[in-house]
Length: 348
Image (cartoon, rainbow, N blue to C red):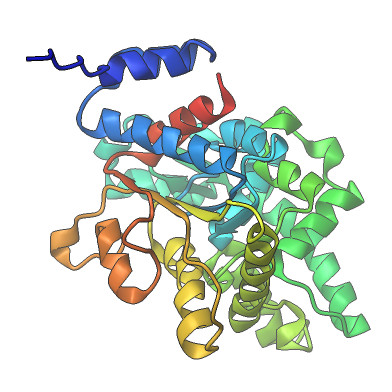
């Protein structure tokens, strides 16, 4: 009987792939062999394979990824054309710029689990807004950005012009009014990288962010005369539908498709993934492909009825993913996982 050929072990395959990369990737290949660690590596390899086939990648940002300074790795992904569109919450849109201009005033509270109500009140009295272990300084960050962007809102309102939230942020970055206030290496700002690339961006639910609240206040007082000076919501969905349709059409002649890399859950992920079933079911557009890759980093629990924690196969029933779509989920902390996935894709 002819002897069976020995299978190549996964660790050997991964080691060979990492041999052409840097030390971080080589560390991942050597140590990340099982459970969530293996899922992380599979996700990264899938991302790389998707791009190599000519695909495009949409990345979604939930939570406080900007305050976590994900920009250190995400900005480089954008600069190297590993990300082709971003969907994020209003908080992530603005907090990257808060960090850009006020980083030196941020305070870390490593003992945040032990803070009393009195400790929290003391932070409030100092205008320090806490996000887990990090406090954002209101005056140096939020109010400084408010003054600059409010000027743009007023100009647009008086001129009868309308722009999306991210377009206003692109305007103030390109205008250079904040440049003298930069307190981090500009290479670490994903918003600056996105602005330089004029990256397509969608910001659903912007109204609940700090700047969204400030804008609403100006509408209520009458300082802003036209509530729709800042475009949001349904208009964003229409823009996303147009971007998806045109991008898919350009890829149709090749083998590439559009991928979906979801960091966290919530509206940042739920809003954009619905564009495909909308195109199929509500607009009756045939020939529009499903998402061609899906990955999610989440610690949400499915058993609580959480959509954010639902396994990718559930999305098949909603017409978002196909049975053969490469699907990955890493049930872990995105602040740990995402930079490592990005490091692998960047060959670091």
